[in-house]
Image: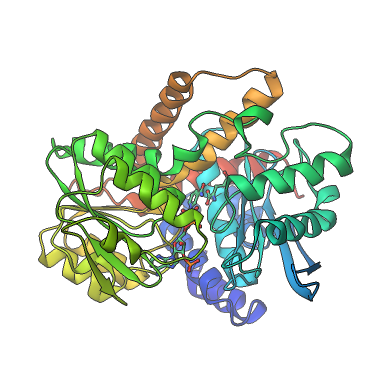
Length: 445
Ligand code: NDP
Ligand code: 2IT
């Protein structure tokens, strides 16, 4: 494999899709050696087949607002690869959504899902719809219009969407309601469902919990733990919430959260009621984190800034892609941060990753560290198939076990000769091998 040649071709065929190029480049660099050691991959043209989505659906989503004005958004579903199981991955509703972002997310999802050890292929979808400031009724009408186009392309053994940015429990409810009516069956077609209608305990917390379980394993290699550590979290959505709960439970102190408007620094620690307040703040749909500082004494709001300038021991980026750049990484290294573990998808730029790894600190990419969300979606699918519900402890234990296993796979495939664990290489190789071998087994499809 020649990475430059493949990348040139990819850029030519997919012009302007910077995030997609970034995600593919990272994987190709990591797997080059193992790919070349396995000539069966080259003869089956595994890379060429893996970087081209199986299919990309785009569709019009017309809907009317509360004043009766008509709006048209664009809907997408990228079904990337289903060699090891039905397509699986979230739906993102955000004005920035475009094909490049969904292809990067769908591509990453292939390897992430493979790492979970559950039978799930990779997909992602969503819309450029902006949920900010929309009423409940508008969100419902949009979800119904979206599903009207998507419903016959998905199914419990075909493609199982879930949430992502802008799609939480409420949106999954509206999407499931209309799906059920159109398909005339109650199935496990979406995950992140409500507990009364097929959802799994722990799914809401799972991405954040999983990320912290992963960081715990990384720290344990260094005979360290969360106990007494100052932790910076970015974002204030679903992932940030779960991470804050688990860090606090393990004895760490969360000192930041952030929104698109800036970040909150709370030296007293963001725990207990404060974590619940953050959840309520997110649910207002206003998308600003600033009100936190008015609510809790001692907390400060830094407008337009990112939390990475605060002195912390551990950083958990849980907001969005490319939210931690080279300068942020340098600031973290300077402040003595020992671990960066990604709750979001691709939050660190490639230049930031270079700085973090170059400093010798622990660094884990999202496709390994945030796999707990989709893993628990897989556990929801399993419970739906068996038509039973597991207890909170049962799901949490399985999630914990899966995250420990992913950590072990990364160490097995990513340990350098000097002992440093390159979690990016480890995650990419472990995730890739399972999918590539499955594709070889199944012929030219
Ligand atoms: P949410 O919608 O709950 O929250 C994301 C929040 O981050 C939004 O408030 C968003 O605001 C905000 N945000 C966007 N850009 C920035 C920024 N630069 N700085 C601070 N905040 C910002 O989404 P989730 O918590 O579900 O997802 C967060 C990340 O985790 C995403 O990368 C997602 O792909 C990833 N993830 C989610 C999983 C899940 O199960 N939900 C599973 C695995 C990964 P705004 O809308 O204004 O941009
Ligand atoms: O990025 C992700 O892994 C998710 N948004 C969760 C996907 C899922 O199907 O649960």
